[in-house]
Length: 367
Image 1 (tube, rainbow, N blue to C red):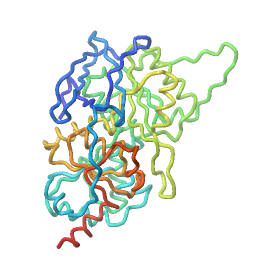
Image 2 (image 1 turned 45 degrees about the vertical axis):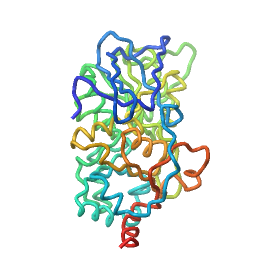
Image 3 (image 1 turned 90 degrees about the vertical axis):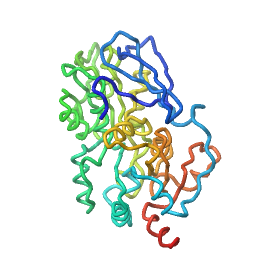
C-alpha cells in the first residue's frame, strides 16, 4: 500500500510548471529517481511551506518519451501470456461498450485465470465506485472481485488519503456518485456532485456568488449534470482558497456511454476549469501512473511482469509504458488501425490486435 505520509506519483509525462500568480497547493516537494521510467517522481506531502505546484499532463508529446518502433500485430498469444504474471485491462472499449459485453470476453478471462494469471481492471470512468463497478461486472455475467477493480473515482480518494489531506477540509466535486461514494468511504467531507446539477445562477447587477472557503480540493470527473454553476463554484475555490488542489480523474476526450457512438468525455469538463482557472490539474487517472503504483504496491506485482491492455493510445498504452509494462492495444474501442499507423502518432504499443478474445483464436492457430 502507498504510505499515508506521501504519495509517489510518477511524472514522466508531466512538466514542472510553477504559476506564481495563482494560489498553489502548499506542500513539500521532492524529486526522486524512478529506474522503471528513467525519469523523476514527484512526492507531495500536505501542509509544509514549500511552493509545490499542479502537475501538467503531456500525453506523449514531450521529449521525455522515447520514440518506439512501430507496433507488431499479435501473432503468438501464448508467448505474450507466458511472459507476464498480471494483465491489467481497461474496461470501456475492451471489456464492454456502454452496457454491452464485447464478444468472447468471458471465455478469455476464464482462460487467463485458468493459467494462473492475476487480472486487474482499471478504468478512467469516475461515475461509479468500485462497489458499483462490481455490480456492473456481475450484471454482465463476469465474476470479478471488488479488490480487482480500480476506478479513477477511487484513485481520487486514494490520492487525497496518501497526501494526508486534512479531514477538516472539504472537497468540491464536479462529477457523479462514484466520486462521492469513494470520498465518503475514505472519510472526507464533500459537497457538490449531482446535488448541484439543478442549480442556476441568476446574473443581476452587483450579484456576488459565495463559496465555501474551507474547500481544500476540487475534484473534476465525468459529469452528465455539468453546468455553469459548477464551473463558477469550482473556479472560485481553486482561484481564491489558498492551497486548493485542482484534481482531475482523467482527461479523456470521449467515452462510451452507449455502443452506438462516442460521447464527449471527462476531459471536456476538466477543460472548462482549465480555461477559467488558467491552471492545469493533477491527473490521478491514466496515463498518470498513480493507479499503477497503487496496484503494484497492493498486490506486490513487479511492473515488468504486467501487460496493460487497452483501447486508447494516449491513456491506456501510455499508462503501461510510463509504468514499465508490456502493452497491448485492442481495436475494439476508440482507436482504429489507421489511427495507430498515422505518421503523426508517436505512441506505439508493443502489440495490437482486434479484441481480447483474439487470445483464444490466436492460441488455436498456433497449436
